[in-house]
Amino acid sequence: MAQNYYQKEIETMPVEEIKKLQSEKLKKQVKHVYENVAYYRDLMDKKGVKPEDINGIEDLHKLPFLSKADLREAYPYGLLAKPLKDCVRIHSTSGTTGKRVVAFYTQNDVDLWEDCCARAIVAAGGTNEDVCQVAYGYGLFTGGAGLHGGSHKVGCLTLPMSSGFTERQIQFMNDLSATILCCTPSYAAYIAESLKEMGYTPDQIPLKAGIFGAEPWTEEMRRGIEKDLGIKAYDIYGLTETSGPGVAFECCEQTGMHVNEDHFLAEIIDPDTGEVLPEGEKGELVFTALDKEAFPLLRYRTRDICVLSRKKCSCGRTLIKMAKPMGRTDDMLIIRGVNVFPSQIETVLLNDGYQPNYQIIVDRVGNNDTFDINVEMNPEQFTDTVSGITALEKALANSMKVMLGINPAVHLVPPKSITRSEGKAVRVIDKRKLH
Ligand code: ADP
Ligand code: ZN
Figure (cartoon, protein in one colour):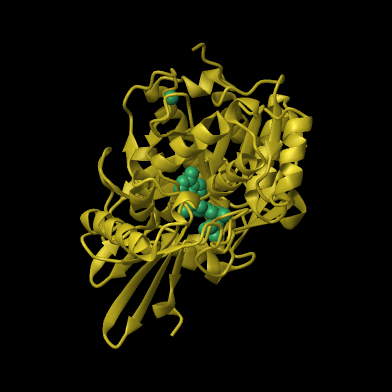
């Protein structure tokens, strides 16, 4: 397939040149932050590091980390590096794991962020002939604004739908022949399910590609959405703290997401020791924003667990790739002493022929953890006998045991009884934290 790039020179730049570019930008950025952000200057002073000590990316490890706790402590203005009069926008995290944090943008920050999203759209095959339906939430959440801006830059006809009102989404998708859908994967699955119920077959749906991210989703879920919508589904990654979606994006190879390395320097560290791990090892992803002016975080610990790879990509891009994040360090459940990621449960469900509609409920009775998974049965199972259902539950619990090493209580619940998500799906209810 002929490859299109949005910014070819950067996207295909030889690795040594990218590293040189990163080194130059890093030196400037550290100086900018040290001079303008008292909070980070204190962290550097405590560590005994001065801007002069940072002469290139090989010195990155000398800088202190920033964490979400720092962002919460410094809320709202403590990490701002530009006067407010130079800022034009605020966004906020979804608050998936606690108090929301806010991020600030200059006009230049918005521009570069939209370029990142435009690279993602072009990598998914988007051109100015496309109709791009943006069904990420608009507002404080970064998903809507980011892809909206990217879509404009590519010159697509942009449909600013925001999330929700699924019937209207489908009506506009069909009436206006949307070719690219941007939303969370759980919302894409919901839209696909609704289309199916309305009697559409994949070949009657005008879409050709989807750009889905903002939450973890498995490879199995990708294949399901691709089949149901008759599209190719591309992953996109980002977080509010680093602007939003578009920090990394997938190309046609679909084997990980290219990090926009000219703007973001990626590292993998051991989450327990903070030690930098070599390429190919699994650990916590850390980003340093090289161009951001208003909210330039250095060595920000994302808590997302993943792997980086410089393996040559068939798309021609030289940008390093990050694997699909497995989940966050704080998404990981420890149940009866065993580490469990919701993504593992999703993999088992889809492999066993179920839909990705499930909820994990963990509680503690006395000193024992309870571990329940509610899974929607498929419509044809709904008419099964009680003993038939029990056998299905047992079979699924067994598959879970093989994957996880511990035995959950699986409950098959009626079709459509688990609330559908229009944004980020809530998969886990951990009642132990609520006590
Ligand atoms: P919150 O941290 O409150 O959810 P954000 O809306 O900024 O706030 O979400 C960023 C987080 O979403 C990332 O740190 C990551 O955990 C998750 N995320 C974003 N894109 C992806 C993706 N493609 N795959 C897996 N997780 C993702
Ligand atoms: Zn590629």
